[in-house]
Length: 507
Image 1: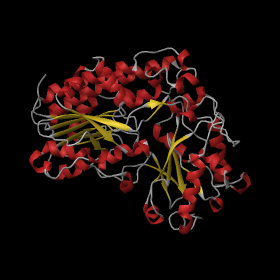
Image 2 (image 1 turned 180 degrees about the vertical axis):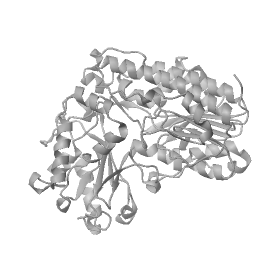
Image 3 (image 1 turned 135 degrees about the horizontal axis):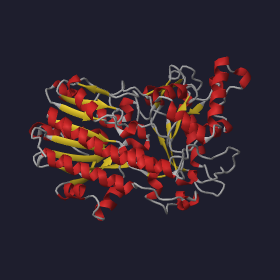
Image 4 (image 1 turned 120 degrees about the horizontal axis):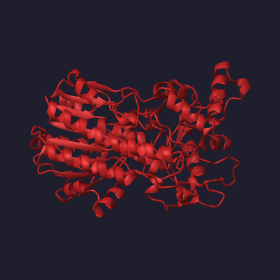
């Protein structure tokens, strides 16, 4: 294999790789290349804002800023001027590598989740070639000189439209496993071709296949977890490839890339959050807030004709059989499904009678206070903001299942005062649910609200912590942990150790 000697930093972003599983497979000798990197380097805990939302972690890394600054927490973001949600489009974040490019550093970036393009003329940048998280629903790249190389390695297997019905869908699980193993191998081939062709000083390569597969296959990693035992998943057949197979293929590709760039290159292999057992997505928050008197939905007679159409479409989607949903998501282009989702993702709130409301989510509970002066349809005066948040926090902290189990691990306030809240784009309260919300039949104590989760094709959600394996003679991490927004400082230190090390403090 021809070596590429120009690369100073190779940063491999392994999206949603679970740190405990990585260490487990290392201890079993199944990840020899990652183990070799660790033996010659250092393990760092990555502290990310995953407790606020999984959609916040990559924008935080990309921009080198906390979510308080960039305001991104998920794929669907609240716009208080519209009293509705908009889809993330990348405009809220400026990649840290834009500054590097402007100062003459050649950069190669492939499939970092949520990345916007900056327009490189040296190196390469490619988005959504083989992505899990979709923003543009199309592959974009620069410069035009790499078009042939990209075409020779396209399409990525993840571009196959495949809908999994759940953990009993053996054929679908085998397909998704094969797609992800093949995708990792294809990604490695494209990366090596691009590195040889463009010789960037910084190569930042994203692997999304572990993220994609884990949402469907994690029950095979922790089969004895209470969440899975309660759902009877022990009876489901183990399919192949397994998550271990997928991690092993990643290790092979990491080994190929490390060999290609040579021993003088600083290496980082990192993840910003991991994976943990779940069974679906908790969906009762809007109904519970309504029952508690925090919000009201428009009655049918109060809705416009457009609102009635949207409500009918939303009801139809909720009650559509799984087999028909698979056809819907497989046949329609992704950008079309997103446009249709926008029409139904928010319920029809009666804003005049709403003090607080839930935002659409894929994991945590997100609550926004309908604050006068911030929301266009606000009803809560600034002087009542703290009292409203305190009332919500007390009620949420007391939520129990009908078996007496706490349903909430933590309620997080994102602003310490109403003055801070006025400037924030984040939800005001973030609810980190406990495992008890994934009970196969969930009853909420003292409530008539149905607690059953939706989206039970998903058997994993994101854990809070990530990791970084750092091997470098010139990069110094002065702690055993690093914040996600500071990872770019390690990269900068590797690019120019003398200039960056004096200014870099990893906390």
